[in-house]
Image (cartoon, rainbow, N blue to C red):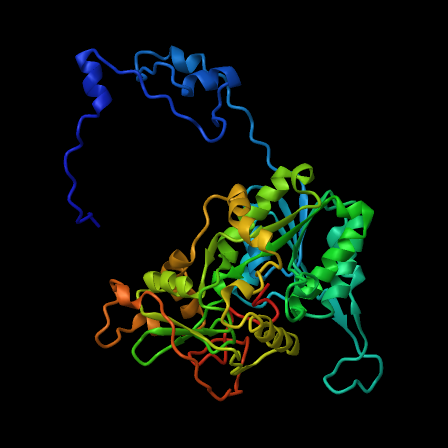
Length: 479
């Protein structure tokens, strides 16, 4: 179909005009951020791009091409990378980019259900290993209530994952005994002589409580489990110097209008959104688009190697935004009013795993400690120094992040549609969805007390009410 866009006649390029006039000015030298990536030898490439006089190539002068050296081959990576919980956001992000550039990926999945698992299993250079890292078995003819008896780490599966591999990106989850799984994975890495081990960890705030604090900081269960695994890795002399510990910020991808706790962008009757959370409205938090940016950053860590990142701790986030600023960015992206309300108690309106419930209770306690004083709020990464250097260090790994505004504009509606929601297809009365007026760019509403309504379940199939959501299963939602 012909394009309806008007095409103006192409103007004569300035260089061609100057050439016809017999005068071509010297180009202004450019300061390159990186070494030129060309097919020329180093000396020739530098002079070619470093400001030497450049003459346009003419068809009657083939000598330039004849003297050009053959392109150097681009060998594909030959190493195998172990990845677990591969349908999680971090793991899937990494698998996509690592497999695309030629790394062989050995990806563990609990099962092949769901959109992400289907995608990962279909990628080139990816070998999927299906099975639980934490197996369940019955110990008698009459299994106990729930159908499971003895439980334990699936060492056989883990050994198979690591056999013959050279690298590993490990992000454990609370599906099973996370600490036991994490230790078993580390032991298997030692046994397999893994060359570089990247572990996605989190801080244990109870170990970072400053002496000046009036009350000790509580330990967040899901985070402290990862911190315990990190400590175990550091106790293994063979693995400690070959491990990079990664701390990730809050996922942009956590937001949903489904009634899930902590990051629910609740749709209001006027078409706006309301986010309720215990975070201080004026204290900055680290933000990260896990699906878009974890993969490239981790890939660069592997490319740099243990000589640069071995034994290092890397806080990974690409924006530091207060909850109000986050709502402003979200409003600009989604084209709707977005308000923030600080609420000390996290509303739980769906059935969630006990481990996650304990995490939410600890979060309530942690972020209530400073009260109304922003200076007394605990740093997200456990130390102020980590919070302050995360942006610079993250950008040194990957320079093309997707911010919260871009996520809200381009991805959030797609994920909502995948969860069976239709608000993005509907116009709201009196609302201009093409532009965001300044008055809708974030704000605060006073806290009120709402009764929790147990009913829906995290995870499932498809449905507009939220009871069935294939894109969010409880074991991989925060992974």
